[in-house]
Image (cartoon, rainbow, N blue to C red; front, top):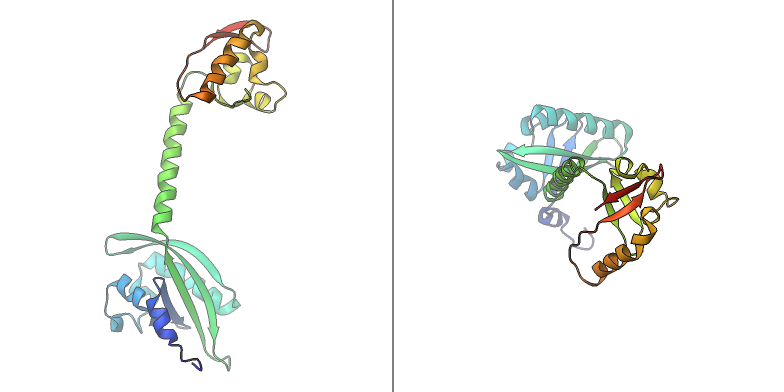
Length: 219
């Protein structure tokens, strides 16, 4: 370049996997990160088709996307899972069209980034959420999250306990505190305030007034 910048060196130092594919779906360029990913000599990669380098299903997906970029000129961003040997990788790939100055030759440039850590974290979070959802669904009773002002977000079980649905209580038209028997409110509130001062556990027994105006003991 006029500035003396070695663009190939910049591309080769990138940790992303960068490659070029021609109109016949042959690989014409890969950077060092891609060579390391495949674990093959570069002469076993350059000139090979996508089907030579990837499993059939993944290769077919790439071909479809590369064809779309070649025909429409529009970029495509997609996530996919791939295996190199026995190791699984999640990657996000951006495919862009590169056209020669005379418009006769077209290449598709792919830039892929390893997002395995993010995907693994998402999957671990999903498993954790499913685990706790299962626990909550099997708890016999009402589950709620209380706040310092004694408002509460009801998660499940309120209809069986007091006759009001979680939606009715969460709408603020009928707060949980309003259901507590008047003579018990001060005692219950004082116990609740103590939780704001010190992280601890308490068990409270008190009466509530249900939707059908019955008195019920709860804890």
